[in-house]
Amino acid sequence: MGMHSITIAKIAALAGVTKAAASYALNGRKDQLSSKTYERIMAIARQHDYQPNALVRAIQNKRTHVIGVLVNSLRISFFSELVAVIEKTVEERGYQVLIGQTYSRHERVEKQISLFRQQRVDGVLVTPNPVPAYYARLRAAGLPLVFVSQAVQGVDIPAVISDDVLGAKLAVKHLIEMGHRRIAAFAWAARFRESVPDRYLDGYLEALREAAIPVDRALIEEDSAAEPKQVRTALRKIMKRTAFTALFAQNDLVAMAAIEELKTAGKRVPQDVAVVGYANLAEGAHFTPRLTSVDQKVEEMGRMAAMTLIGQIEHPEQACPIVRSIEPALIIRESCGFRMKQGFDRKIARKREFRG
Image 1: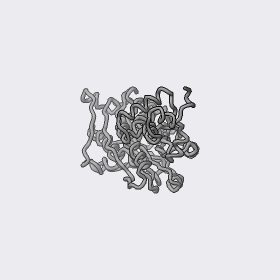
Image 2: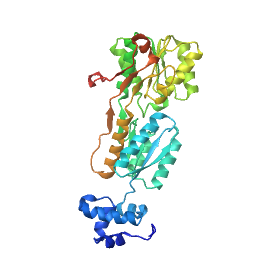
Image 3: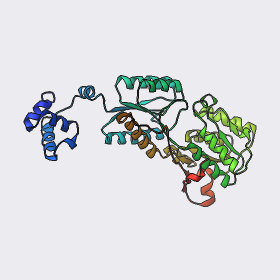
Image 4: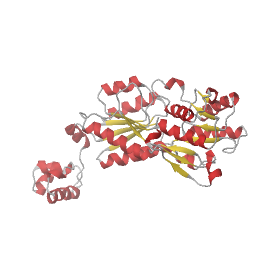
């Protein structure tokens, strides 16, 4: 028979069971049936190439078992790895994913989420742009929503993030342990800080305070961004203002662009300037020099975010922590000079007592 000629009623008749029993089997509810009955029903369904009508099932169940996943760009390994983990996690729970990319533009966020809602997704995982009012409207409309990798202040929406204060602190403490006192840093663009605290800068400042190193604001570029051209401009501003022997960048792409600019300026990395990045991107591990970076535990983050969203979808009445934080680790490679000094790579994870 063709795929359109078999119905649940016909499968039930062929299997000698009730229509309800056939429906249980075809909807994966094995717990309602004996294993023998379940297998008999499924064998007949496979024999006749039964294809469920997803639209009808969605109307009946009020769910599509599809979630939207919205990330910055799949060209960046962090986001492609994050999506892969999310997809695997939700598929194990019977969900599928629709994927969108924002390229850090809020209009893309709105467009993609609008498309997701037209497709009747059950919920959305998003690496957000910091626009609290927009997400508050989505929350009020009843859309299950979870932020991943970054939280937004001012909205009651769960977020699964890496502990970036601790991560930045690990990076800067390591540079201090290597003997550096003049450590430059990039800050988040000022226009974002009202809704997204600069946790990287907080960790940087905490590490300096704990080492009793005075904060020199000339070492901090207050309005940097992630585009290579803007990073290079920001770094040139710091170099004009003051001297430094180390640099902490809030992500690996920024760190790599900064290293290129340092080379252009005749500086050797790490001999003249040590550099530490953030996110432990695959790109940084193959850069020259290989990049020391903070690992945000993308697998753990993706699994936790996916399960948090499924929990919201399936149990909306249950309270959910607003922020779930994952402990990062420092991956030490050549760009900070440690390999030259010690002769091997190593990974550092700090205990909770190091948190600020």
